[in-house]
Image (cartoon, rainbow, N blue to C red; front, side):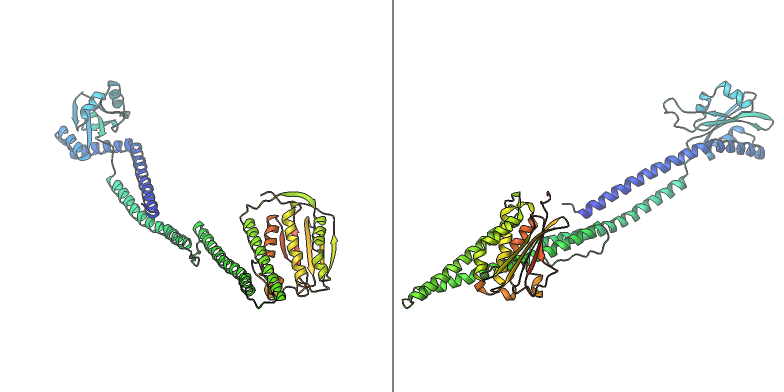
Length: 462
């Protein structure tokens, strides 16, 4: 298969050859046109020189004299005296006689210069240079002298110079084309190799991106893609590791307590406690599986999305009431400050967000603690804040709090039953709705967690 290097080189060479050919033809035609324009003046000078040579040399034989001039200058010559004596020399002299008319001859003897088109009947007009007739004096007699070049004048020096120049340009251009083609193809080959390595799972490849052209932009784009793929691969590995870890712990507990139940020495109270633990761990596995399926569905962008207008303030109150047994059990106080707000969104998805956030607040807020929930409109957006007086979020955890399976050091107590997926699911749903979720920058996260959610009144069309 012919490579890009060959194609670029061949294309440039063809273009150069065509350009040189066109330039040569154009230059040659320009030269011929210029030569034709100067031909009458040159013929007048040639006739004047013939007259001068005759006056200086005074040849005894006019026929021999004109034949020698014809041979030396490559011209056909016809001379007619006033006494009707004819002398001619050169290969086209007979054609001159055939084309010459009495009227033209009379004009010459009258002192006028006459242009005479001379060509054979089988030639296409005008293939041959014209003849010029003038009145001259050979000795004491007047003659009508007609001179015609046997062919258009050719400047051989000019032609050879042009050919040499064009060949030189071809050679230099070919070398430059080879260099430019290599310059263009080399980074493309590097990109091809880099893409091959990335397809094989090597995302450490980096391309030089110093060029300021489109190839440089492409190299930068591939570097960014490699970095993103590398990060995705790390996230995938972490995800698999975290899933394995999260599933291994309850499975180990279930297996251990199931084995203990087989012992005849287990008392009735211990048996009930073991069964209760197995049930809790089974429920934790079920929640983990459900969250993983939910997250996978959201990531695939195939998750059902059914937006409809509804009262967001009522939904938030309903969520608080649904969680009343949990916060009442810990003697927590939930304070609401909400404006009447209508939003167009997927009610079920947002309900899951509020449940996850409120569950987190209740989980990490101690007994007799407080949870604040507010709903307002700011700068054309809906803003929901959920703040608690719990353990807060340490600074080292803030950048990673929305990562999947990430749990801060203070929340790693297995008795809390968390999997580290709740905030990630909430963030994904909020993003689907065109909103944002983050820790409230205006709150002190060390005295309790505070989340701020911004949502549009309706998601913009994709």
